[in-house]
Length: 298
Image (cartoon, rainbow, N blue to C red; front, top):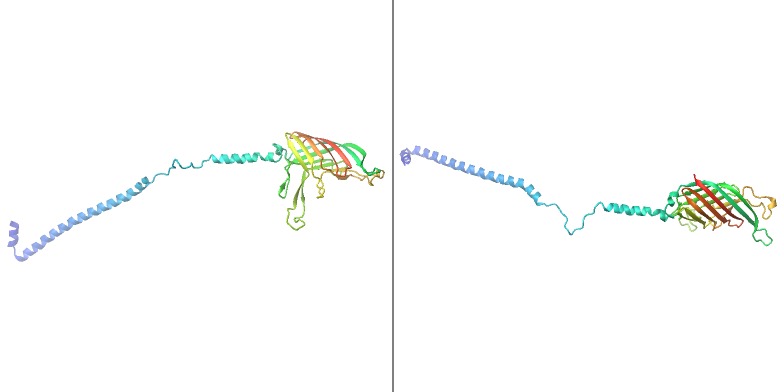
């Protein structure tokens, strides 16, 4: 109250200045209070935003569970399926020798045997008065011989249906009395047939049907392929210069006679050796023969 009395007692100009000073002081105090309150609110807002921002990632990570298969879903494939596939493939491969003529036949591919063939030949002619066949002599001899076995031959889109291909040779091809057995061959022919259609020029010709099991071979000449003019199974035997005139001499070096269907070649054949017997004749009926071959791996 004393202060207010003193103010009222001041001159008018001084009182106005004092009033202005007091009002200014009150205004500054008010503004200062507002400023501190705004900063606090701003700090609180900033802190809240920072807290949310820092907490959001961990909260999101925690709310995302690891995927787990349910009990009703099928189990994912495991590595045990691969051995099953490999076993199936192995089983298919293991059946290949059986498809080519018997278990173990493929072990003979690439084998070669050398030895001696003891050959007996009965000769016939058609020089009787009625033109019928008659005996004309016989002969026995021996020749160095070889037998080679290989993978079944393939020509064009065909493969020889035997457990192995066979090539037997007794003597040199041009030598009188020489014998040759071919189980198959590949002949090169025209790439077009008579109508002009394309065909594979590699023609597979199979001559023998070969059976082999447990070290025993049973082979039969089934087709000499004379119609294709590719005759390879031969007995080279000399003939007379003039038919029915043996007194005029014989052809030098012999003459190749095609072996007839039904000729056989049978016996023991395995990795340790070969002991085989052949029987047959020629397509012209001039020669009947029999020989035994004993060979060792070479």
